Length: 186
Length: 430
Image (cartoon, rainbow over all chains, first blue to last red):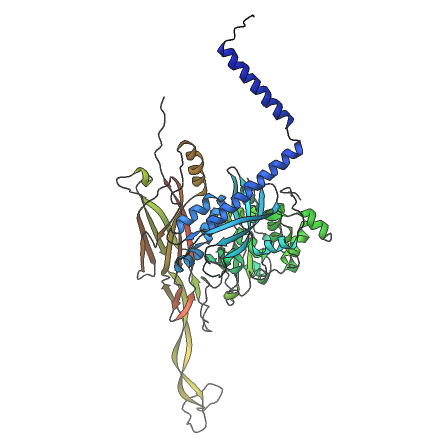
């Protein structure tokens, strides 16, 4: 019987080649169609958007009067667009004063219910929020919110809460399917 | 880019139309024929307000209160000219009744041409025009649609397909409060100041003048405000100054020149006269009415002689003063972005500081000449983040009174400044 000498190096190369070819075949066989790809990308964007919305809501409604307004704003600003951060920094003085007066210590849990609008660079999500105890000025521990997320270089960021008129307009649209509107289209 | 575009748009709208300066049009009191503001106007300064129509309702009954911000002037006849900030104007247009927009001179029938242009330029790209056209084919141009919105006939919110432009607009106003695009005129606004945008802040309300003398006049200069870092020259973040934790000192200073109230006192003098004789009196002088014998009685009466001018220097003292510092958005991005790439887990320690009252306090008073000042300091403010801090001071004055009569209403004024906080970063030198 003829003996064929095989070096250890050649053996390793042969094994690596075999693995690469096998993986290649599997990838090609399972290569998704183009539509599936874009659908997966959209789902991924939705997932990122809803996660950002949940994070933002949790930061806004997680209140501990002892941590101070600056710390609260910092947490909000970390998950917000610069404009969204400035909106809270500028307009939340009276809100925070109420938290301090009431010695509020509240934790929040939120859930993304449905994406109600999407124009590619912005998403609007309907959220449900549950608080550990009511905030001053309200007896509720559960409520619904509509939040705007904006796509930035560092991912989806919280921009603002929709105003009452905008919510009414969105609710009036009913259950029509979400359409993608090209921004700036006239 | 979007922001730059908006700024250009608003600046182009700033040029007032010379067409106003004609004839008996109330605008002729506001603008000179060349389109410049009439120098007779009293500059009431910038006033801010927190109207309901500019608050954003949050879940659980919470709300974010946005500032409505107006620069206002008073005309000699008591009309008030209002220049809202860009974001205030947008919200006014969205709430024309509640904001008092519809109460301004120049009804919708005369056309709010500039306002329609403003709305189209700041919000037009965020409307779903195909939906507007499908549901309302009667609007053959965007201007017609915006006109209907301002008339309250059309709900604009139904057609928005973009949302972020509102915060962009707000941010633009915060960063450049001087960006104002439209003049609104309120006839007799000084008499009905509670009903006009900005309310009665700073409005001049002179008492009724005596008949023989000219109307009293009021002139006032804008307060001079300064907010600045005084030491050290190059503040270091306190995290790198572990021994001293020096931080930085911020100083504020306000000088409110006196309100000059000029009024005219009618001076009467007693004069001997020969008046007609009444029944039961004995004539002792001749009235000069043609009689050759005495037909009158010697008497005295008060006769107007002259108007005596009084110039009062009324102190408008500082009633409240607040100062804050906030790390700007670009610096925050730099810390969490670029710095974070080279220094693991770099984060913003404290972006906002309430300087006065808080870390420091202020004192104030007025001198005999009516000039009021207030100064304050916040020492060793422990800035822990490098970058540009936006400094802001807001001041409210007491208003002025003369002999118990209010002459000017309290004024709200503010100023912005900036300061740098530094961090030492290691560098490789070849």
